[in-house]
Length: 583
Image 1 (tube, rainbow, N blue to C red):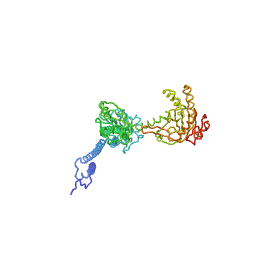
Image 2 (tube, one colour):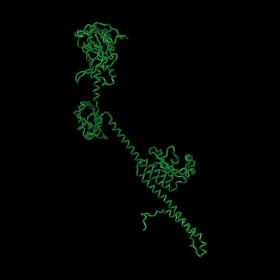
Image 3 (cartoon, rainbow, N blue to C red):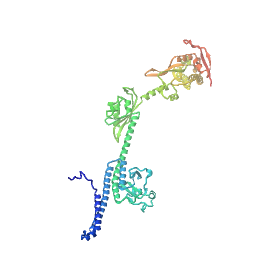
């Protein structure tokens, strides 16, 4: 039983191989007939007339048929490969893949050593080498490029296929320096065209073999270039779209990061007051989760800010006006907060699409400002500027060694009885200014004014000082001297004197008072003893305690005295009157 070709008991015979076998057989028969013609004639026999010649002719025709079939097979294979690659390059929009496939196909179709694709920048029209490959489908290092720029530039400019069978002997190129230096022989350069515009060139060459690119290869590559130009342009368009999309995405991510990172809350709404943007800062400030806010109406999500807020949002949207308002709502967790709201219309051209709200949380700032305002009541401005962090001042209360200056105007009660109230206030204020200036000049702070008396503090947490005792003593001497200077400007009946006491010791310092009103002050026996020293001082005297004297004795001149008044203080046995301070 015979087997069908599908069952395949015998190997298939290639058509060209069978024709070659028949051609050989015809030639052998022709030679055999020629060799036996005499033998056949002797026996009275003869071969058909012209048989050997006919067989020889048949053999030659069969040989030409073989050559034709071989050539057709090669061309068919090239066309199949061309169709396959054309489908491939049109099936992807990755520009790098398309370029590699195109040049690999050109090299395979033509037998070139190398292939290059040069693309023209659509804006600058500059030519740029985008891909360079060898016959092994490997990228060529740019430092090893072997190409005639003269030929590339000519084809890119003229838009016509250029081929040379032997560039070294071609009259067009033999004088071209690059051709001679690079020893180029076969060169094929084809323009890439898209809608009549030259978008680049395909360049292939071979340094060893002349006459490599026949008319068939030229036709194939030229046809392929037309398809490749479309694929390349599509891929370039896709690349531009992809890059644009990446840029848009990057910008969007950047804007999202900006919204997420800024300290201000950002809220946007549409025309129906539904929330479209609610950044993390808004969620933190207002105690509202962002995922619960997006898509909801503004007034159903936000805590009550103030009674007129809904009307304010409507005015911004309807009248296209920016608005700013400060509110102090009470939140569930944070309690009362200070918020600054800036409202602006969101427009699309002339049409308002919604409202943008920027929420600045000023709660901590207002608290700090309140602390600074409190500090400014006690410190000169230049000292306030030197405070780095209010939180480090421990205004809640701390025990530390301080020096306290207590001063009081002598004879003020009798003096006040003889003056009109306006004159009295003007005069006492001038004396208190003298005391304030003296204390501030030595870095002290004013604890309080008590009528005609003043208290200066040195080495508190507001004005830490290592030499606080000497500063307090020096402030007392300056105060006494400045009072004498003031006397030069006052009538004799308005001349008064300070009694000044200075003591050094431990004390409690901090804010005291009610929640609505607090004052920074000093508590403890050190303050009371400074007051006692002041009560012991005569007009213009600076009296210091033994504790203070032991600290400053190397810097001042002082004489010891017995206390003039020591009721309730049996330990008070000595005091010192300061007469001078060493320069």
